[in-house]
Every structure is written in C-alpha cells, then in structure tokens.
Amino acid sequence: MKTQHKRFTMLLMAAFFITHLSFAQRDRDSGDEFHLDEVYEMNATGTLNLNTEDADVRIIGSNRSDVHVKIDRVVTSRGVSSRSRDFDVDVENRNGDLFIRENKGRSRGFIGVGYFRTDYDILIELPEGASLKVRGEDDDYYVKNVNGAIEMETEDGDIELVDCDGDDFEFILEDGDLKLDGGKGKFYARLDDGDIDMINGNFDNIEIQVEDGNVSMETGIADNGTYDIRADDARIDFVVLSGGGDFRVTKDDGRVRATSDFETIRESDYRSELKLAGGKADVQIRTNDGSVRLSKR
Image: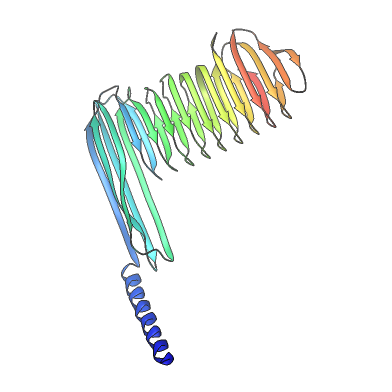
C-alpha cells in the first residue's frame, strides 16, 4: 500500500513538472507593451496631476494650448517564466485640469527564475503657464520651462528642473537627488539621503530639511526674506548671488567657514553669527555633524 502511494505521489510530481516545463517553454520569450500618443485639452494655467511608478518622465512647457501625452511601456521577460500585470493609463480632464494615473490590474503569469525588464518612458508637452502636482515611486523626472506652481513627491527617483520660472516649489524625496536651475519665490524641500543642487535661484523664502544628503545652493536673498536650512550630517554650501543679511549657524560637531565678505559677530563651539552687508535677510542653518560654507558671488 505504501509502495502504491509512493508511486502515485511520484506520478503527480512528474505531471506537475511536465506541465510546469510546458508552461515555461511557452513563456520563454514574452512581453507586454502599452503605447499612448494623444492630445488632450487643459486650461493654459491648469494643473497637470501625474501619478506613475518607475517611469522616466520628461515634462516640457511651451506656448501650446493643449497637452501632448506620449507613453511607451514595454515589458520584456525571458527564462523559465514571467510575471506581469495588466496595465492601462487613465487620462481625464476635470475643470480645466488634466489627471493622468496608472491603472494596474492584478498580477498574472507564473513567477520563477528568469529575466524581467521594463522600459517605461513618458513625454508630456503642455502650456508653459501650467502647474504640476506629481506623485511617483522611483520615477526620474526632467522638467523644463514649466512656470506654474510645482509640487513633486517621489521615493528613490531623481528630479531635475530647468528654466522653471514659477514662484512656488515643493519637493519631498527619500533617497533621490534634486537639481534646480532657476526659480524664485517660495522653495520647500524635504529629503532623506538625497542631495540638493540649486543654481541661479532668486528665492525670498526657503525651507530645507535634509538628513544625510548634501546641499549646494546659489540664490539671491531678499530683504525680509527667511531662509531655514536643517541638516543632520549634510555638507551645506550656501552661495549668495545678491542681497545680504544675518546668518546664524547652530552646530554640534560641525564646522563653519565663510569668505571675507562675511563679518563674524559671535563665535562659540555651538553657534556662529555672521553678517553679510547689503540686505536684511534672516538666514538660519542648523546642523549636527555636517559642515557649512558661506560665500558671495
């Protein structure tokens, strides 16, 4: 009886293996593709709401009056088996704003040993006066000539902005890096391990929170403007392009260096107070083990 049971079990295992092998061979070189190339209506000063995952995204502003959306997503798998999910994108115009959101169905296919790759590119061309509200997960973004308010949140992706002349910027990242060329008005950023690289700025309100990343910023500072930078182990390089004011640096084991443009008012182990002639801005920098360098161009 035990011999018959053992033989039956072996037959079941052999049948499962043959079925599995047959399925794997059918799925040895498979792929899924999604392509979208359409034009949509949106107000010239409307907001683009974008929600994606793992995409390379380019958003370009121009003098056009509508929005061109081009999405190409190709999933390639080779090997014993593949995995994929039904994928679609919902695009909707609501009250002059445009909403673009991924719509993923349930996972399908057999998960096993093999090769799995996704190439996912998004190009959006929209009116230059539009605003952005972006939520992503591991996406990388390149944004150029978008002059409305910009609000972006992602996890490990990088963000680069060029020639965006709006006056309201907000960024939340985990391990990604942020690059900004230009901008004015209000700037807020919160990062974990990412770096901030800002050039050609002209902001009158800046609030930055960074843990282990580095901050390199070049900006004009305004009379009665407020600038608050908080970092843990970060290196902070603050270059003043125009204006002046009072600089207060609070530190634990950190180090502060300043060019001869800055007058040292007070200095202690835990606090440095400096003054830059030419304005009345209020600049506060807090760091634990990081270093701070102040200069004027």
